[in-house]
Length: 274
Image: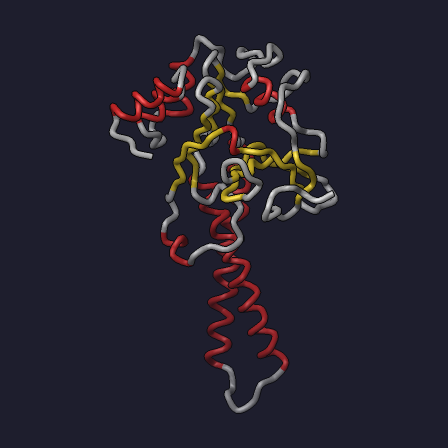
C-alpha cells in the first residue's frame, strides 16, 4: 500500500501514525526536555566529522576530474572524434552531476552545528527548526544555492501539520530514517520535509517518533529526565545547543510558551508577523 502523502518521498517504506506510545525511549538523541518542550538532536558529531571529510575529499577528486576533462576536451584534435573523447565527455557530464549532489552534502555536514536540534512545544503545538538549508534532501536545487553555503532554514511549524514517514536508503545495510512530511493544513499535500531521525539500522527503529508522540500527548511514558540534560538543567542545555547558533530571541522564548495566547504575546512583543 503506497503512502497517502502526495507527492510521495523517494525511498518510502511506511507511514507512521500519531498517538501516544507505550514504548520508553531507548535513544541518546534526546538532548533536553521539561514540562513545556523537548529537544532532539539530529546530527551526531562523529558522523558529521566523518562524512564532512568524506564528501570534502569527493569534492576535491571530482573537481580534479572536471578540470582534467575540460583540458582534454579543449586540447583534443577537432578533426576527428575518437572513443577516448566520448569517454572524457561522459566522465565530465557524470562528474558534474555528481558534484551537484556532493557539494550540498559538504555544506550540510560543515554547517550543521550543535546537533541541529529540533524543538517540540506540547502546550502550543509548535515545532521549531534552525538548521543548514542543506540539511534536507532536495534533489533539485537552484544553482544560486551553491554560492550560499551558510544559508539556514529557521521556521516554526504546527505539530498537526507534521506527519511521520519511514524511508530507506536502498542498500544492503537496510538503513532507515524518519522524515516529517509537512502538509497543508487538513490535507495530505506535502509542501516541505524535515529530517527527524537520520540513519537507523532496521525498519523498527521508531523510538524517537514514539517518544515525541507520547510527549506531545502528555503520556507518562515520556520521562522528561531521559535526556542528555535533566529538566532542571535548561541553562546548560541552551548554552551547549542553542546559544550562538542564530536562533531568534522570540523563538527561544517561545520554547517555553505555555499557551497560544502567551505565544501570541511573545510574537507581538518582538514584532513577529505571520
